[in-house]
Length: 445
Ligand SMILES: [Zn+2]
Image (cartoon, rainbow, N blue to C red; front, side, top):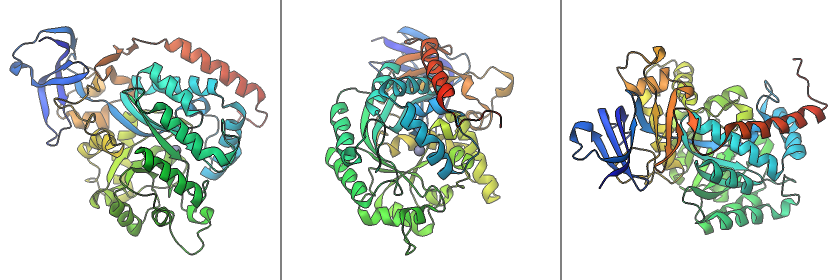
């Protein structure tokens, strides 16, 4: 039977267990799944409703961004060059209190959908407030996502009474469970320094009862233990472990200040890690001990963090940073090679989110989340090793075609299903409001 779409004339980076690369490969897709993957010459019947010519480009799994706060694209460039504490408490939290509403969240989330899809990300893991509006935007944008309603112990947008924070997160999970094939609800507990032991425990209990991912920022900065009030030297990671919130369905975000003991604790509990090198660099949080984590057998996915602390959601740029920063920090050019980093941005990210049986590699039977990257351009020429190019030479803007579950969302860098200019006009209106009313803002510096 004919394929729905047949991708041909590309070098296919499968990211399967053997990291197989197929020259002049073909990927046949039917009913949203990969039915054939192999050399074009081995294709018995190339009949397809739709042919997609990769024109010598690189075909690979869609990238998985394991940590975002999608609506924060509204605050891109609002406050930079500050320490995390002041950035968060003096700028981001007040801006959120003032401007975050279901409508603004929807607009910011759609902008982020557009940015991610255009730069090759087909799945993200998000945590924010008014997450219901994020889910609606994600549904409209067509991207795949794991979405967590935020839990924090002070009044937050949409959750004026912190006493209801876990219940709100649970309501979100129940509303979105089994509602969309592309959306997996989750719970996003902000951090040990903004949530009490009681909040963390009951939020994890709720996530466990619903069998959904529990996301938490942890060990992001060196002073976090003090901020949590851990005066006896207990580390935030050990503290979370003591509360019983670390397991294979917990995504520990950042873990920059995880020491050898913490890494052992994370590995013993089977917790998943989201590594966000650009955000960690920009906020001067430090460099996460990722090579030690990998050596300990931890699953480490890559993420951008919200684009107010990055300031973009470009996973191709993030791969380049992840590959380079650890080499510089460890004075060792052999660590974090291109293959390792591509795995982190695809199959390992999918594994961290509990989705590796469905996405993260191009293999028969998997859902067709796939991207085609243009290779016929000076900075991508010549092409010896496609993995090297994806990590060290490519840019987000090189992504030409993007497919989620077999649906072609971006073709020749153009959206097929929604109006980018409409989204940008909405965000421009909101930014105008921020600019007019925020007296504290100083654009001169
Ligand atoms: Zn974050």
